[in-house]
Length: 413
View 1 (cartoon, one colour):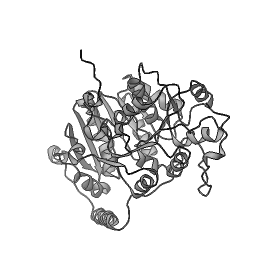
View 2: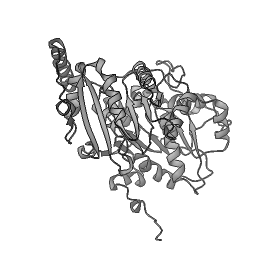
View 3: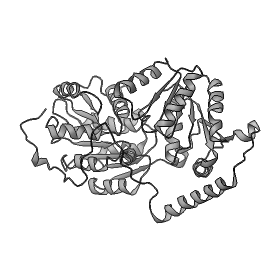
View 4: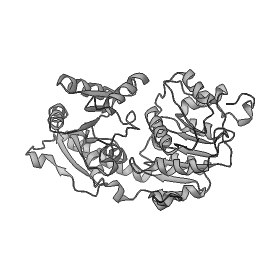
């Protein structure tokens, strides 16, 4: 068997190999595009074992952080390079033990990483590689100041890559301040089409959704993920499915880390057939056998739609995605449909279900669509929302950044 000596022989996209050349990179990519390999493989090649923490990867959620760690550990087998995962909700003692093993790579959520920085249990003086994964989600969760705080504590001479599904102005400003002439890698529209996914939609009243949800699940062979817009909806849908006799688990932001890991464990081991989740809580889910994704609620952004349906049709497989569109969400759904290049199945037409939208809702839908379009030309529609994260109090916004010189060099793992 021929031994591979070049990354090009791994079949990676040529444009992604810019990272290997030491360039800063801004990558616009949705889920399932192989971005973990794109930034992890070059990092592993350039890191020197037993020389302290040299790589930091920041992710918005603990699930995604754990998923990234799992992938890196696969790539790092037999290299001698160790990875530690740092996230809120896990006991500090466990993380202290991991740090004492002197890892070369940290995968962390920003809040918990700052906790360690303030304790002096992590130093970033030797960091040469920084990755911001799912940057738009970290922005949405209120992490933007935390990210800047952390970047200020890393050496100026470093390689930085930023990966995001959307590029709101705040993300571009973060890149402008912290990156050196970054190369842009953009996912082209064909990659966003989801051409391996059979996509369909059904416009119905909101109160009719439970009935059709059960109908679609009963007709499915394989595992299914149901996406809801809020934690309350997630719990309600979970109860509906459980009462109907379905084996389901839920994941939402208010659950303890132990319960979230328990739910994911059951789903990964196929002990439960259905996972009901919010968008943020579901980041990091990578289960190849998911056959069906159901959008119980229409997402409020087109890229979130592609993130959701990208949970099926993994590793070259085919999958299905069904979106239940309430009358009040028709305007948002029409905007999402414009971004897809594949033909969707209209289940209203196929099943003979007539759409009877009341006149007031039609007017509201037109007003929302006009508002969205006018916002695109005047100011960004993507608003920053400060959300509690990692069960830790946020740093006060007016508090100044801590400089590297404020940290003692003596207490270092």
